Image (cartoon, each protein chain N blue to C red):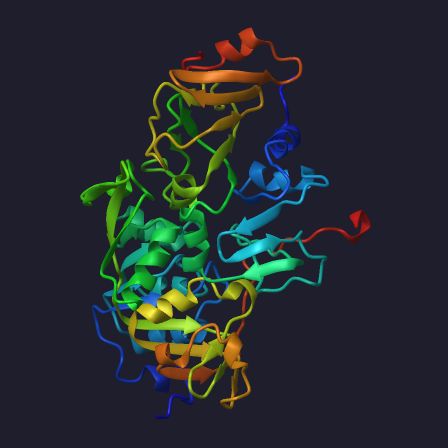
Amino acid sequence: MPWDRNQMAARAAQELEDGMYVNLGIGIPTLVANYVGDKDITLQSENGMLGMGPFPYEGEEDPDLINAGKQTITELPKTAYFDSAMSFGMIRGGKIAAAILGAMEVAENGDLANWMIPGKLVKGMGGAMDLVAGVEKVVVVMDHQNKAGESKLLKSCTLPLTGTGVVDRIITNLGVLDVVEGGLKIVECAEGVTEEELRAATEATIV
Amino acid sequence: MKKVYGSAQEALDGLLNDGMLIAAGGFGLCGIPELLIDAIVESGVKDLTVASNNAGVDDFGLGKLLATRQVKKMMSSYVGENAEFMRQYLSGELELEFNPQGTLAERMRAAGAGIPGFYTKTGVGTVIAEGKEVKQFGGQDYILEEGIFADLAIVKAWKADTSGNCIFRKTARNFNPPAAMCGKICVMEVEEIVEPGELDPDNIHLPGIYVHRIIKGEHEKRIEKVTTRSRENA
């Protein structure tokens, strides 16, 4: 059985270590916050906040307090607010230890495409290009294949890039792979998924 | 010098020209200068270039200026919440210059700090780098990005004193300080105006030197995505 969204998020949470400042992207990456357990993780929201808390209780939403996905959130005792220039200063400056992001395509050399499908989806890159350029460790969480059953882990990306050679680790519904010299290296398979199945589902070179 | 004005219309009087470049604060619908945007819609000024992280939604914020076709070009990082924007852009009626979010913020901050250009690794090897100078520092490629020198900045703060010293509230700060800094003239709307001395000088988020005109008003402060958790799981 491949991992579901929550299992992928739980696996991604294992990448986080005590004391880390972390930025979580929209979608499955947001769920990672539910699985950090006792680890002291400080979440950054790139619209200008460190120490992001959970969603508010109904009736306690504050229009002045949202995350980068525009959702209402809450603050914690350790929260700090700042402007967008400082927020991306800490991202570009390498102060954020890890970013967990979604992806449309990843290439075997670590290239990432996650912001645009020409002619179809032109919403914009938001902070994704800054994050992958500046953050120390970039972990991608994504489905291994698209709806047509084609690999999203490719020899080279076909969509416009978010960054070149920026991905360190890929967590999919089928397993965990690292970007290494010459291609992708299988770190582990999802429970019930064999290495052969994972290889067969992957276009990228597996070394 | 008197900085406090009676209304958004008064505060913008004499400042609006066709074809001008306006920098706007806000992230999504959070911390946007909603009253000043409404007044710009009413003024009928056109062919605007607007530097703003987002473009509002169809019936609120900068979306209103798009609906009236007063905007010629947007400089933004993410415009996914606005169907009219998409329609105008895909039909070629609206120019769009995508900027990575941090690059957009830094382009504003840099211009406000007198820095016309800077090198960044954001966007290297992507479409963002096309046509831009590449320079190596320490063996790594960086691209040249230019400061955004706006004719006018429109921003929103929480409280200001009558000299323009101001504070923001929570994540409503976002692009407001860098946008304010990059404007030749900055007009600010706030929820409360106080006398000098009432704000702690050690805790001013943006000094009044960057703020030329101030108005106080009632803000709708619409929430884009209300997201809550249930009390049962607490």
